Length: 88
Image (cartoon, rainbow, N blue to C red):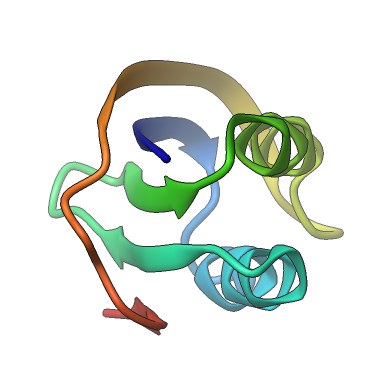
């Protein structure tokens, strides 16, 4: 099991980006959360199998209609045992 922390830059707030992320994460069986940060970025933390996390990263690059994803900063680490997937 792996953990990714992804910081998403661009026009991603106010277009359902967190819920777009949550839907895909649940579909892939991942745990974690997506949160809007005060600086306009979205932080996504997800845990699961490497192949599923890579699919989520691909999904995050696309974003929902109306989003303009400029950059993803991805950090990999060991899973910590998160349960479920939340949005804040």
